[in-house]
Amino acid sequence: MLRNTLATALKSTKAMRARAASSKQTRAFTQATLPDLPYGYGELEDAISGQIMEIHHSKHHNTYVTNFNAAMEQYQEAEAKNDVAKMIQLQGAIKFNGGGHVNHSIFWTNLAPPSQGGGAPPTGELLNMIEAKWGSLENFQTTFSATTAAVQGSGWGWLGYNQGSKSLEIVTCANQDPCSTTGTVPLLGVDVWEHAYYLDYKNVRPDYLKAIWKVVNWGNVTERFNAAK
Image 1 (cartoon, rainbow, N blue to C red):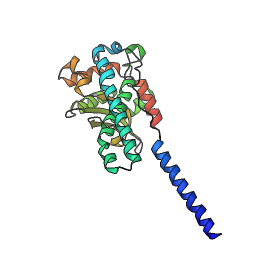
Image 2: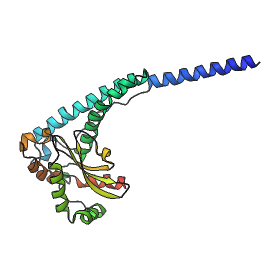
Image 3: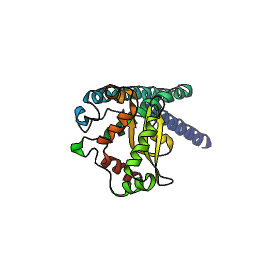
Image 4: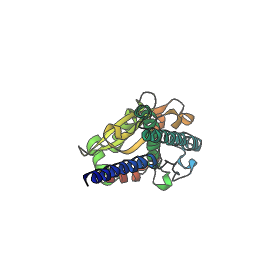
Protein backbone atom coordinates (compact mmCIF):
# COMPACT_ATOMS: atom_id res chain seq x y z
CA MET A 1 0.00 0.00 0.00
CA LEU A 2 2.87 2.37 0.85
CA ARG A 3 4.49 1.50 -2.49
CA ASN A 4 1.27 2.40 -4.31
CA THR A 5 0.95 5.67 -2.40
CA LEU A 6 4.52 6.68 -3.26
CA ALA A 7 4.00 5.76 -6.91
CA THR A 8 0.83 7.83 -7.05
CA ALA A 9 2.55 10.82 -5.43
CA LEU A 10 5.49 10.55 -7.83
CA LYS A 11 3.18 10.35 -10.81
CA SER A 12 1.26 13.39 -9.54
CA THR A 13 4.48 15.36 -9.07
CA LYS A 14 5.64 14.55 -12.59
CA ALA A 15 2.27 15.60 -13.99
CA MET A 16 2.41 18.91 -12.13
CA ARG A 17 5.91 19.59 -13.42
CA ALA A 18 4.85 18.74 -16.95
CA ARG A 19 1.87 21.10 -16.71
CA ALA A 20 4.09 23.87 -15.31
CA ALA A 21 6.63 23.38 -18.09
CA SER A 22 3.91 23.37 -20.71
CA SER A 23 2.38 26.54 -19.24
CA LYS A 24 5.76 28.24 -19.20
CA GLN A 25 6.46 27.33 -22.81
CA THR A 26 3.06 28.44 -24.11
CA ARG A 27 2.64 31.59 -22.03
CA ALA A 28 1.26 34.20 -24.38
CA PHE A 29 2.84 37.59 -24.96
CA THR A 30 0.47 40.35 -26.02
CA GLN A 31 2.31 42.26 -28.71
CA ALA A 32 2.59 46.03 -28.50
CA THR A 33 0.90 48.00 -31.27
CA LEU A 34 1.42 51.47 -32.68
CA PRO A 35 -1.34 53.69 -31.26
CA ASP A 36 -3.35 55.96 -33.52
CA LEU A 37 -2.87 59.67 -32.96
CA PRO A 38 -5.91 61.53 -31.60
CA TYR A 39 -5.34 64.27 -34.22
CA GLY A 40 -3.99 64.64 -37.75
CA TYR A 41 -0.28 64.89 -38.47
CA GLY A 42 -0.61 68.52 -39.53
CA GLU A 43 -2.82 69.71 -36.67
CA LEU A 44 0.05 70.68 -34.36
CA GLU A 45 1.46 73.27 -36.74
CA ASP A 46 2.92 75.85 -36.19
CA ALA A 47 4.60 74.24 -33.19
CA ILE A 48 5.46 70.93 -34.90
CA SER A 49 5.17 70.37 -38.63
CA GLY A 50 3.06 67.62 -40.14
CA GLN A 51 6.16 66.20 -41.82
CA ILE A 52 7.93 65.72 -38.50
CA MET A 53 4.83 64.25 -36.87
CA GLU A 54 4.34 61.73 -39.67
CA ILE A 55 7.97 60.59 -39.68
CA HIS A 56 8.17 60.58 -35.89
CA HIS A 57 5.01 58.53 -35.42
CA SER A 58 4.91 56.20 -38.44
CA LYS A 59 8.66 55.57 -38.69
CA HIS A 60 10.44 56.14 -35.36
CA HIS A 61 7.73 55.03 -32.95
CA ASN A 62 6.79 52.14 -35.21
CA THR A 63 10.40 50.95 -35.18
CA TYR A 64 10.42 50.88 -31.37
CA VAL A 65 7.23 48.81 -31.41
CA THR A 66 8.61 46.36 -33.96
CA ASN A 67 11.93 45.91 -32.17
CA PHE A 68 10.29 45.62 -28.75
CA ASN A 69 8.03 42.83 -29.97
CA ALA A 70 10.97 41.01 -31.55
CA ALA A 71 13.02 41.29 -28.34
CA MET A 72 10.13 40.03 -26.21
CA GLU A 73 9.58 37.04 -28.50
CA GLN A 74 13.26 36.16 -28.16
CA TYR A 75 12.98 36.61 -24.41
CA GLN A 76 10.06 34.19 -24.29
CA GLU A 77 12.05 31.59 -26.19
CA ALA A 78 15.03 32.05 -23.89
CA GLU A 79 12.82 31.83 -20.80
CA ALA A 80 11.26 28.58 -22.03
CA LYS A 81 14.78 27.14 -22.45
CA ASN A 82 15.93 28.59 -19.14
CA ASP A 83 18.66 30.40 -21.08
CA VAL A 84 19.47 32.98 -18.42
CA ALA A 85 22.43 34.43 -20.33
CA LYS A 86 20.21 35.19 -23.32
CA MET A 87 17.52 36.67 -21.08
CA ILE A 88 20.09 39.03 -19.57
CA GLN A 89 21.48 39.90 -23.00
CA LEU A 90 18.03 41.00 -24.17
CA GLN A 91 17.44 43.42 -21.28
CA GLY A 92 19.04 46.36 -23.10
CA ALA A 93 16.86 45.94 -26.21
CA ILE A 94 13.73 45.52 -24.10
CA LYS A 95 14.47 48.63 -22.04
CA PHE A 96 15.40 50.78 -25.04
CA ASN A 97 12.61 49.77 -27.39
CA GLY A 98 10.00 49.22 -24.69
CA GLY A 99 10.88 52.59 -23.21
CA GLY A 100 10.62 54.17 -26.64
CA HIS A 101 7.13 52.74 -27.06
CA VAL A 102 5.98 53.78 -23.58
CA ASN A 103 7.46 57.27 -23.83
CA HIS A 104 6.00 58.05 -27.24
CA SER A 105 2.59 56.67 -26.31
CA ILE A 106 2.49 59.22 -23.48
CA PHE A 107 3.98 62.00 -25.62
CA TRP A 108 1.26 61.86 -28.29
CA THR A 109 -1.50 62.23 -25.71
CA ASN A 110 0.38 65.04 -23.94
CA LEU A 111 -0.10 67.10 -27.10
CA ALA A 112 -3.22 68.47 -28.76
CA PRO A 113 -4.08 71.07 -31.39
CA PRO A 114 -5.50 74.34 -30.05
CA SER A 115 -8.93 73.27 -31.33
CA GLN A 116 -8.78 70.36 -28.86
CA GLY A 117 -7.44 72.40 -25.93
CA GLY A 118 -3.75 72.37 -26.75
CA GLY A 119 -1.96 75.26 -25.09
CA ALA A 120 -4.77 76.03 -22.64
CA PRO A 121 -3.23 76.37 -19.14
CA PRO A 122 -3.90 73.88 -16.35
CA THR A 123 -6.34 74.66 -13.57
CA GLY A 124 -7.25 73.37 -10.14
CA GLU A 125 -4.96 71.38 -7.86
CA LEU A 126 -2.31 70.76 -10.51
CA LEU A 127 -1.90 74.46 -11.19
CA ASN A 128 -1.84 75.17 -7.46
CA MET A 129 0.99 72.68 -6.95
CA ILE A 130 2.94 74.11 -9.89
CA GLU A 131 2.59 77.64 -8.54
CA ALA A 132 3.49 76.54 -5.01
CA LYS A 133 6.75 74.97 -6.20
CA TRP A 134 7.82 77.20 -9.08
CA GLY A 135 6.02 80.46 -8.32
CA SER A 136 4.02 80.55 -11.56
CA LEU A 137 3.21 78.46 -14.60
CA GLU A 138 5.57 80.62 -16.65
CA ASN A 139 8.45 79.98 -14.24
CA PHE A 140 7.73 76.26 -14.37
CA GLN A 141 7.80 76.29 -18.17
CA THR A 142 11.07 78.23 -18.19
CA THR A 143 12.67 75.84 -15.70
CA PHE A 144 11.37 72.75 -17.49
CA SER A 145 12.60 74.00 -20.87
CA ALA A 146 16.05 74.94 -19.55
CA THR A 147 16.46 71.60 -17.75
CA THR A 148 15.33 69.64 -20.79
CA ALA A 149 17.44 71.68 -23.23
CA ALA A 150 20.49 70.67 -21.19
CA VAL A 151 19.97 66.94 -21.83
CA GLN A 152 23.21 65.70 -23.38
CA GLY A 153 22.69 63.87 -26.64
CA SER A 154 19.24 62.32 -26.86
CA GLY A 155 16.61 61.95 -24.17
CA TRP A 156 13.47 63.28 -22.55
CA GLY A 157 12.32 65.94 -20.13
CA TRP A 158 9.50 65.02 -17.75
CA LEU A 159 7.14 66.49 -15.23
CA GLY A 160 6.68 63.60 -12.83
CA TYR A 161 4.70 62.99 -9.67
CA ASN A 162 6.55 61.55 -6.68
CA GLN A 163 4.01 59.40 -4.85
CA GLY A 164 6.25 59.11 -1.79
CA SER A 165 6.66 62.83 -1.18
CA LYS A 166 3.39 63.73 -2.95
CA SER A 167 5.23 66.37 -4.95
CA LEU A 168 5.89 67.38 -8.54
CA GLU A 169 9.38 67.01 -9.96
CA ILE A 170 11.16 67.95 -13.18
CA VAL A 171 13.37 65.05 -14.23
CA THR A 172 15.32 64.08 -17.34
CA CYS A 173 16.10 60.68 -18.82
CA ALA A 174 18.75 59.63 -21.30
CA ASN A 175 17.92 57.86 -24.54
CA GLN A 176 14.58 56.05 -24.14
CA ASP A 177 14.76 55.38 -20.41
CA PRO A 178 11.18 55.75 -19.11
CA CYS A 179 10.25 58.30 -16.48
CA SER A 180 9.46 55.51 -14.03
CA THR A 181 13.21 54.82 -13.72
CA THR A 182 13.46 58.11 -11.78
CA GLY A 183 10.94 56.98 -9.18
CA THR A 184 8.23 59.31 -10.46
CA VAL A 185 4.97 58.79 -12.33
CA PRO A 186 5.05 60.41 -15.79
CA LEU A 187 2.64 63.31 -16.25
CA LEU A 188 4.18 65.31 -19.12
CA GLY A 189 7.03 64.23 -21.36
CA VAL A 190 8.88 66.12 -24.09
CA ASP A 191 11.04 64.26 -26.56
CA VAL A 192 14.37 65.97 -27.29
CA TRP A 193 15.80 63.43 -29.68
CA GLU A 194 16.73 65.39 -32.80
CA HIS A 195 14.20 63.49 -34.90
CA ALA A 196 11.48 65.22 -32.83
CA TYR A 197 12.41 68.74 -33.98
CA TYR A 198 15.40 68.98 -36.34
CA LEU A 199 13.48 69.47 -39.60
CA ASP A 200 11.72 72.49 -38.05
CA TYR A 201 14.25 73.94 -35.63
CA LYS A 202 17.61 72.56 -36.87
CA ASN A 203 20.00 72.45 -33.90
CA VAL A 204 18.20 75.14 -31.86
CA ARG A 205 16.56 72.89 -29.27
CA PRO A 206 15.46 75.80 -27.03
CA ASP A 207 13.25 77.20 -29.81
CA TYR A 208 11.47 73.85 -30.09
CA LEU A 209 10.99 73.74 -26.31
CA LYS A 210 9.55 77.25 -26.34
CA ALA A 211 7.10 76.46 -29.13
CA ILE A 212 5.84 73.16 -27.81
CA TRP A 213 3.91 74.83 -24.97
CA LYS A 214 1.46 76.05 -27.63
CA VAL A 215 0.24 72.48 -28.04
CA VAL A 216 0.71 70.90 -24.60
CA ASN A 217 -2.49 69.13 -23.61
CA TRP A 218 -2.81 70.12 -19.96
CA GLY A 219 -6.13 68.28 -19.80
CA ASN A 220 -4.30 65.00 -20.39
CA VAL A 221 -1.56 65.97 -17.93
CA THR A 222 -4.22 66.67 -15.31
CA GLU A 223 -5.85 63.27 -15.91
CA ARG A 224 -2.50 61.59 -15.33
CA PHE A 225 -1.93 63.69 -12.21
CA ASN A 226 -5.32 62.74 -10.76
CA ALA A 227 -4.68 59.05 -11.48
CA ALA A 228 -1.22 59.18 -9.87
CA LYS A 229 -2.32 60.74 -6.57
